Length: 428
Image 1 (cartoon, one colour):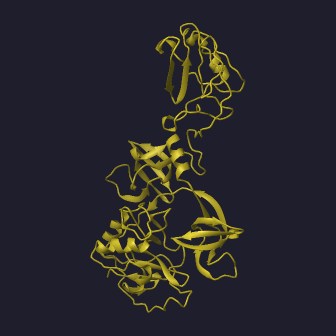
Image 2 (spheres, rainbow, N blue to C red):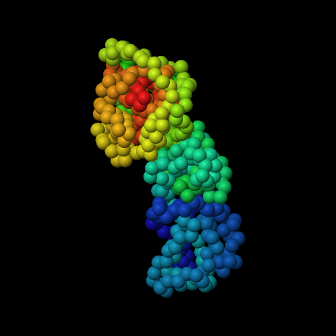
């Protein structure tokens, strides 16, 4: 740390800023607290009586923080040592301090601010009172301030929310489409939330057209591997000349830059769809399965009972325990990591069903049905470049529970991010 000229044998290094708050260079990030009000030059000069001395300012417009330093509280080896302490995150250094009872002079030099500083409140667009879930697995969102209330959503670790109000240790929040209450102990706020948000933020592509073709190569003359719907977010692998190479549930392809917006995103809560056993399920979408390649065989569909079994309900609830856990290609652990087919296989295995390890084999895993007849507990299959390349568990209300990509892990998302090829029913 550089030091300014010592006046009367004493030098206090204080944080300064030119229009922005700042922290002293060299101060450990882990020790930085939420910023406090920074005094301006006039306020600093006004507290000279309390300091029993003289305060000088080196530059107009530079903010000084002195916090009513009480000299009688300072103890050190006379004339030899350096005493340093922190008050609200601001570092003070006193050197050669032999006249503390008479005069303290602040000498401020230009500081090279090398450390990022995140102010109180939120610097993240779209949030005015940002909260970030601070959990290793997931945080329940309830419809009331207490554990007795129903769960309406789940926030995996590092999810963002807008804090609306506080009630007896609980925050009322809105995260994505989910609004409810979370226990405040597991939510980062203020400075900590902003830092975590900056660490967790990812850059993705937002689809801004009705249907976006994903091609095998970066050219409109190349074959279409699959398509994605408006409003979906795509993971960027590489930026090319007018094209992006993207990852769609661990399958790669190319999209034109003309039909996507590059945006920064934060994860948000997933809505929990209440599935009731032994009741008739009415699908609320008009999508039906279709094939875009002769490599995938034509399907013969069977009309089945549309009631949801208790087994399907239990299976979905079991799978939700693992939301936020990692995606690992070829992995075999719901906790430490697995891929899309592994996730489906392991969840169904818990309920006595033996399913294939490969996505392409799921066409023969049960009874094939059209997508518009699917009910919670059915398996959705996705055709990519002429083969079944992705599978997930349909949980109703247009949502899919699946192991997505290495960056997103096990999650709940739209079942219609691209058109499903068909559904397979394993649970009667």
